[in-house]
Amino acid sequence: MKRFLISIVLLFAPLAPAQSYWEYGHQTVAQIAQANMSPMARANMRRLLRAAPMLGTPACAMRNIADVSVWADCIKGDRVRWGYTNSWHYQNVDICKPFDLKSACADGNCVSAQIDRNFALLSNKALPTHVRLEALAFLVHFVGDIHQPLHAGDHADRGGNDLKTTYGVMPGYNLHSVWDGLLADRALSAAPAIVRTFAPAGKAAVDQGNAQGWSEENWAISKNIAYPRAVDGDPCGAKPAAPVVIDEADVTASRAALRQQVERGGIRLARLLEQALR
Image 1: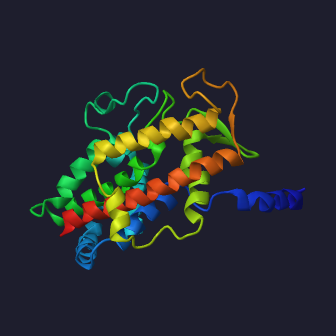
Image 2: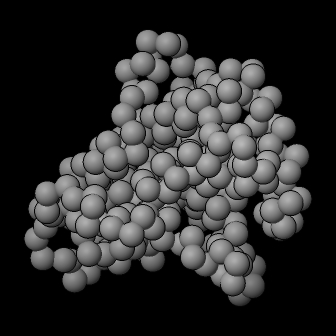
Image 3: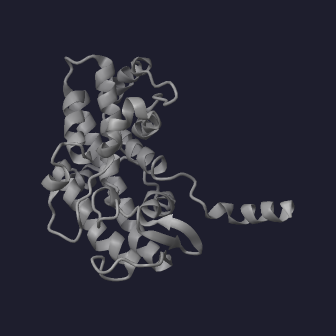
């Protein structure tokens, strides 16, 4: 029986994502940004990283931009010190009503407001180095978060966390985890390589706007792609009683949008870091 159970685990292990969006997606956004930054901005970022011991988070590495990109998730394990940051990673803007960011972010404790706040902190060279490093880590992470559509749009279900799904033949997921993990893994690992230096014309086409505009852009993808593909139709109708099935057609229709938003996030993050670190 033991050998049988091990064989079953090994049989299905390749179906699991190599990493969830919390790591793979965030690191990819950050690595795209780094590939499209100037040598001077990269050097200034490395100088900030030397202040990592001053943050007092030894369990959450800060060796490079990939580490930086997931630091904001890592520290959530310490609820006493960092629990107040949990709401900074998303904003619940209802996809079944006109776009309204003010109601979803009335107190500033949402992802778009925190992008603006941490960009301002990082840009302020009068602040101590460790304060700017903390702002860098939050900024890198939150630009990634806002470009995951289910961090930007929701339907009274915590960004799809309460919408149960079956991914192909794999039960036990929800819509948010599919976009965070399984779908992200397939979209971002596909050829051509997503981490690369983009031509100026390619960057100019997407490197525009601000956190509010990116909020609405990703809210629209949540509204027009993520939710409709999951429920096979009207995302504002009655909530399904049983888990919805995410099949291959849904994956094919959705992964291009996810990949596009990661690319956009990386290019836009490069511009913010270039401005703040010059």
